[in-house]
Amino acid sequence: MRFVGKCAIVTGAASGIGLAVARRLAAEGAAVVLGDRNIEGVEQAARDIGAAASAVALDVADEASCQAIVDQAVALHGGVDVLCNIAGVLDFGALADVDATRWDRVIDINLGGVYRMARAALPHLLERRGNIVNMASAAGLVGVPFNSAYTASKHGVVGFTKSLALELSQQGVRVNAVCPTGVKTPMVARSAETPPPPNVNWELVMRSVPWLDGGEMCDPEDIADAVAFLASHEAKRITGTAFAVDGGQTAG
Figure 1: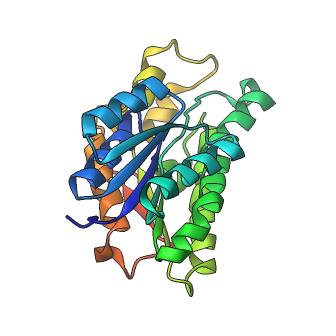
Figure 2: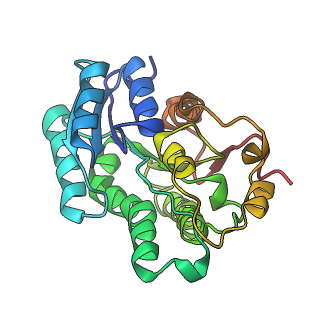
């Protein structure tokens, strides 16, 4: 029960890693405010979690929406102790096929969303000496071919995490990132189920991501374990880390 009396905001909480994180923090005593563009899904998630959870429609690509979920958390619980930036999108494709619209969408959600949420929550995190856990990726530490926008965005999240951790290191606010390999989430399932993009060398992709080549993907709960640890007092001396949960993908 590491989060009794704490308020946590979790973005991308309707499914996958975000939902697993919200469940884990609530199980350990946190009041959780769940945000997602899928309002029906996030409302159902909040009902499933119970009285500790509330749901808010959230588009992390919109500054006003990011401010609104922070304001809601403060109105309900008096402040914010933990911000978990989980919302994200995935987009495989050869660079020649990734036009500016696709590129901007991935960067704006995966990296811009982390920036907007952190900036909106920062005054309250400073007040409570809270912390931020950002969802990066193994693709934020090494390259993944035919995944340029996503890989660039996640490298950006790692860099943003390290920079902000240093900026806030004297003010009592920690900032860390989790870097998973493939995870069994609806986002990954949709990518696998749709027709493969043209001009993608999947053999090369599989060599770069071990779990794609017959290995076992992580469960969302595996990643929630790491998020809960980094968000807890047990990690009080840890800031600016890119915490890999990747089965060795980035070890070589």
